[in-house]
Length: 317
Image 1 (cartoon, one colour):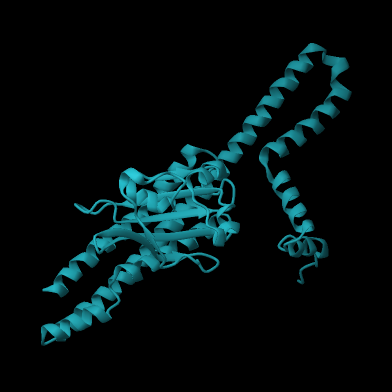
Image 2: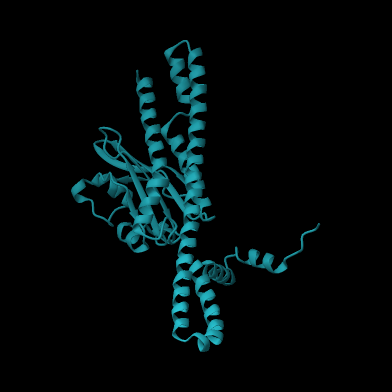
């Protein structure tokens, strides 16, 4: 049996993805009436109007009590449905996190197995060192893989792609410290990749005067940071002229510093989005999202970093 054509729905679906006023209007109407509270309100209005016309003259004040109870019950049901939908969405994101982590770990395990097999065949230390160097078991390569998996998981959350995932690492050179982006995943190429940011002394670092990731390294902040509103983001960020269009539109931000034993804050994983409420609608919701979804990736990076340190020490010997 052939499917019936739906020209109206096809037109709406096509126009809704374009960057036009009509598309934004379609998206607004969709999100408005997809809201369970709006649905409940419309349902109440329709039901009450019909009921008033029929029942008021028969039941008097008891009718008003019944309408009140019905209204409260309808909103409670709408709230419960919204809560259930959010839980389903969070569960899917968590499943995506587990899948992303397992896929990355599986790839790392295969690489290690290949490296181990080749090392058995090595007859000299120089040959063994070269095998390790060629095996791509390094922190930066793994960091790119983690960023890509996390970006893919977050993009699937709301079927949007306006998420930036980056990893910054602290380095020391000539008695001075700097940090630079060593890995990223985003819809567009990140212009600040590999740029060196000088880290000032702790007492000279001021919030909003330097890049926030640089501020975290300077102050040695080890706690997870999250900004759930655009105002908080703009207060903490130093906006660069070359990246002003994007940085001024950041709505939410999460930063997870990692401190290997005895090294202090060495690198950090950060994510941001231009979508309002993407990570959660409140401070506590964003914190929970950071803990349950982003933090496992940061822990994986920590494990990879410790592994790369061991390999570097082996090569040095």
